[in-house]
Every structure is written in C-alpha cells, then in structure tokens.
Image 1 (cartoon, rainbow, N blue to C red):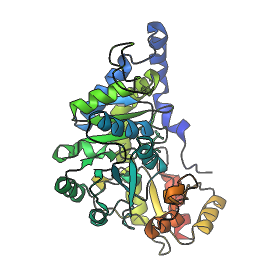
Image 2 (cartoon, rainbow, N blue to C red; image 1 turned 45 degrees about the vertical axis):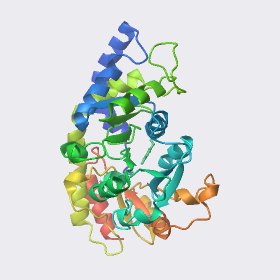
Image 3 (tube, protein in one colour; image 1 turned 45 degrees about the horizontal axis):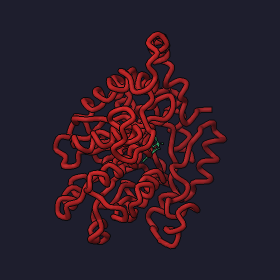
Length: 364
Ligand SMILES: Cc1ncc(COP(=O)(O)O)c(C=O)c1O
C-alpha cells in the first residue's frame, strides 16, 4: 500500500541528530521555554523574513492568541467581525470564536480553493476589523487584492499559514500584512513530533503581548498583567524543529517536483487538477484534485494500493458544532467539500510509486 503520509519515513533522517539533542536535554534539565525555543523563534523569524516569532502550543492557539492580543492592545473588541474563507479547516473559525469575535464567511474561488477577494467587500460592515485569509493546501491567496481591500477599510490582516511554510520568505517584505500564524502539526511541510505552532510578525507590541498571553499573561514570573493561557512551544518540539528547519526549502522543492509531474502527466479528463499559475508561490502541502465521482475514485485507488484522504469532507458551516452557521449556504464550498480528494504527496514518495499512481489515475 502506498501510504498517504509516511511520517516514520519522513522523520527517519532526523532521528540520529535528535537522539544527540535528547542526551543534552537530559544533561541540562531545562524543560520549558529554554534555549531551543528561543533559538527556533529566532531562526524561524529570520527564515520568514520577519522580525519576531513567538512559539505556541499549536496552530489553533497561534490564531486565537493573535486575535486575543489585538483585543488586549485595544485594536479589536469582542463582537468585531472577522472575514474568513468558508472553505477552510475548522480551526480557523474556532480561533475566531474562542476570541469572542464573529466569523463572516466568504466563498472561495473554485479553481484555487482560496478566498475570492472580489466577494470580500460586500461582506464588510462597520464591525469588520480583520481579514483572515488561509493559504489552503499550500497555495498563496491573492494577497495583493486582499491587501488593497484591507488598506481601503483599514483592516488588520492575519494570514493563517498553517499549510504554507516556506514560499513567502522570498517576497514577504512587500507585504502590508506582517502577521502569519503557523502549525507544526506532524503532517505539515515543517512538522514536529507532536503539537506545535508559532506566530511570526513585524509588530513588536503584538509579539510582546502574545509572548505574555501564551504564558499565563505574565512577563515576570508570578506577575500577571493580562488574562493568559498556557500555550508554550514545547522545548523538545522546538529542538526537533531546529533540526528540520534547514531542510524546509528542500522539502518544498521536492514537493514541487512531484506536483509538476502530477500536473503534466495526469491526463484523465474526469479529474480536475489543481490550478497553479506560479509554482514558486505554492508549497503543495496537499495535492488536491476534484471529481464528481469521488467515492468511486477513492475506492478504485485503494483497491490498487493507493491511500488517499479527503481535506475536508464537511464544510465548516455544515458542521454539527456550528449551529449558528448551519442555515447558511455556500455552494462553492459545498461543491469543493463534496468533490476533493488528496493524492499522496511528500518527500518520501519514490519515483516508482509516483509512476504507479499516475498510471493508475490515468486508467480510471
Ligand atoms: C488551515 C489551518 N489552520 C489552523 C490549523 C490548526 O493547527 P493545529 O492543528 O496545530 O492546531 C490547521 C491544522 O491542521 C490548519 O490546517
């Protein structure tokens, strides 16, 4: 069986170095917010081409704490509206709710799966304060259009970059938006050995506030300035991420090479391949195709020894938990959630496996 994701194989090359670090870890005996976290924060900020990074417990908290920090700084108030794509992973919407803000969903473009900037303005009200684009599946959103709207209405931009590690580093300086949130969930392009996340920003006050929020609202031990949480990047996860970060560009390039082969060699007219106009701006966290015949395709691939996944089977507004959104209709999102299928794409795939997947897909 060709696994959708073989984490054992992906992390194997880093094992020996990590074992070495583990030895130091036991020798030093410093477990929380130590040198590895500080080092990762410095390394990752620099990698992103931004000034500050604060490591947190996971990608959900990265978004939640960013929103809460803006509230603590007086730039947002409870009940303010946040523009967010209707086609995202549920975490983006949960973060908005956890910060006592109101998610306002906007349809994506069918081709890119990402928020349609042309539909944003009609959703803006006097309470709109934030646009929260999500670079879904590793494809950059139309940031120039989004930034133009943000500028016009004086809105904050927070980029949910949980699926977008890497590519922005070449051009992020041109952005007005300088706050990006990350997840290092094990399956991500830069994945830890457990939960981990970070916020990267050029905003010093925001950075200092999130640093307090993640640590009980405290800067000085046992002095609490704001209401915080416990969501610190774990020292061991940080040490693993420090080992992996230098290889992220290589990982993304490998992914692009696989994606290029899928894009040029899958010729089956029944399958809609993902749109990509600039491969350098795509990190192919996922390679997502569409077909109205998804159930049969997934079954056929499985029977041929190819494991696939669905990201995601139910649109956020249709989730049972989102009762207040259930009455809304987002036909494009619903179509996407009904038709998408993610093919195996990661650096552990061999050429033979790739040849086989392409051959089998072309026979469907
Ligand atoms: C787009 C998006 N946002 C946020 C998250 C949340 O990250 P985490 O699982 O680390 O909390 C994820 C994680 O899968 C994600 O894909």
